[in-house]
Amino acid sequence: MMDETISLRELIETIWRGKWIIASTTIVALMLSALASFVWIKPTYSANATVSVNNGIVPGKQFDETDSYFNEIITPSAYMERVQSLSVIEEGIKNAHLQGKYMAEQVKGSLSVENVPNTNLVRVTLKAANPSDTKKLLDGILNAVNQSIWKDIQTGVEKDLHHFMKLKQKEHVQLQQTIKRYRQEAASLKLPPSLLLDAVISYNNQYIMTLDSDHLRNISSLSEKELIALNELSNQIKSLADRYRQYVNKEQQLRDFIHTFSIGNKILTISAPVVPQAPDSPKPLLNMAIAFVAGAMIGTGMVFFRRYWEESGR
Image 1 (cartoon, helix red, strand yellow):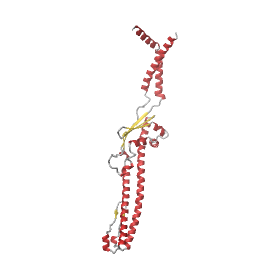
Image 2: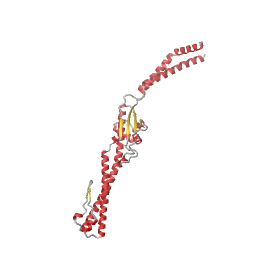
Image 3: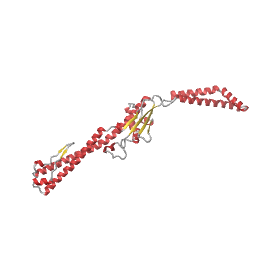
Image 4: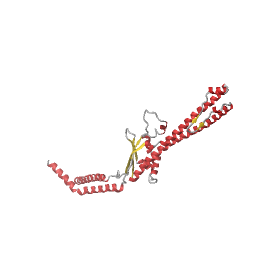
């Protein structure tokens, strides 16, 4: 018991004799920590956003024809890839009016994206040195993503729209030519004017008078060959008119889709970015607390090392 008391007394005396060393190292550590926290290390701010990405496609339900334009590009995984695209980030910087201040590669390195497990939610976090810029950049990137998706959808629709317009025009020309041939043929056979095929073709309506074979036999002395030829032309007109009508409907369907489709119905920002009020790093109080403990421990170690050195030299 006496040995333990003497050892504890010596321990306390050693620390007391080296109190200025311990105090000095602690003060130096605190000063270095303060300089690092307030001067050397630039503060970093982060802005966050949570986005719901839902293309509205229900598994097992039959697709609408227009679903193909967005069902693959409006998914959480596709959205995450697009957010990290350099071209989208570059456009986001332009949206935020911060060109020249930030580079796309730099922003991409400060961007983190994750899909909340078992949901269609995507969480996006961006870090930057300026709190106001952080919010502006993230807002700009989110808008750029929506613009990019809409542009891709629009491009696909316009490509098909142009295709159907060409087909419609082709069918329209063929239909008019066939109608002309039919009327010429009917006129050469001296059919009554009231029975000539009268077709009015427009984008919205199609009127075709159907001529009955038996009726034609009763009012005109047509040969079997002439009757077959006339009916073939009539069937061609009906077939061309059906295809023409299909292309007109396809064109109108795409025009309606492009007019009514809204990205906001598929991609919804649940939690919008806000200007951060405090930096994520550095944390001065935490850093200084760590520095205080580390400085005191280093000082104490130096004091005991000095005592060991003195005693071992005797």
